[in-house]
Length: 209
Image 1 (cartoon, rainbow, N blue to C red):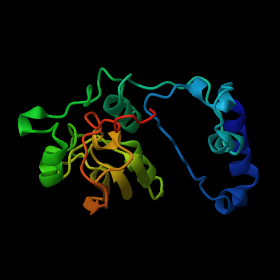
Image 2: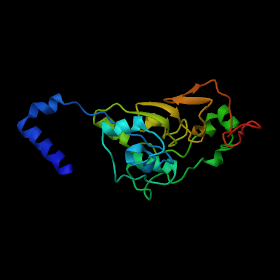
Image 3: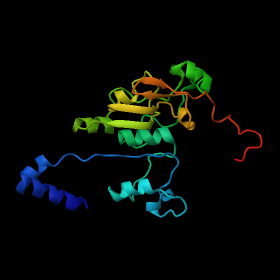
Image 4: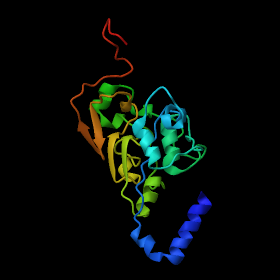
């Protein structure tokens, strides 16, 4: 496939130079899901749970069969993806909450003190896939969970090659479907949900789990 693509590119540049000018850059959508194996999707052979929308992405895009997560846990795997560095060279190698800051495990405290949420940050000026895409003329966006730099740090999305971000800065906030706030770029957007610790919230007595 790589040889064919290269050959077509050479032919286009040499014989049909106008086709390169007319052809726009492709849109790129990349979905990274923590704790999901490739076998969990129908398009990879899973037969118990329907995943029609993701299957359609495969039908209109490409199917990767030798593509692996860079780490078994979330923040390091996103760091590897974002920087292209092997985990042995990557800046983030654990889901480090930086507990030296204070009560970083308290959802009530994080709600009141934004400086307590978030993980260890990417360094300023890190070459990321976002920056590479920007350099190639793309507008970039990230939606969902970040976990690569606490609010106010150099690791926030908008300082790491992301033009538009909406979602969870802190990956611990992403442990609930009903967060009290999300982030629009570097600003908190408060929602009408109560602050709850998802690891301590129990079902009502007699509820069917």
